[in-house]
Length: 162
Ligand code: 4NP
Image 1 (cartoon, rainbow, N blue to C red):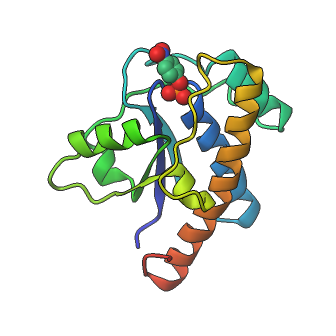
Image 2: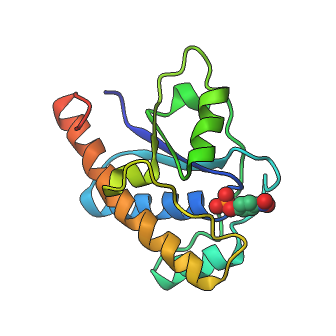
């Protein structure tokens, strides 16, 4: 496999996927995994915006500064540039499957597939309270650990990492 590259996707790219990106970056750094990491939204409302202040706050509580992240929308090129595209919920996954170009090479999955919760969605905390962001951080942290191990195995064996 070429250098792995992981793109985390949610709806707005201001709550869940920036937290997934931050958690995965931290885990990759912790285990010494050389990987490109980014996040994007299926929607375009928050292009150029920093993450939601509640997402920034929960990341800061766990030692990560995401204030410099900027929202962007998924584009066709992402399906060729990234080896893995990880949707936060089932709607994100069906939107990705709908816009996936014919020559896509990225492997699509759901975030919680990597946390032993196959088929489940990371709940959208946007319309909720601060506690929801704690749940999001916990979910994406667990999944980031599982995904990092999977990518590490793929690099070592050249196989799918299952
Ligand atoms: P996210 O949350 O998909 O986790 O970034 C949302 C952020 C913004 C909106 C919806 C969900 N919105 O409708 O603006």
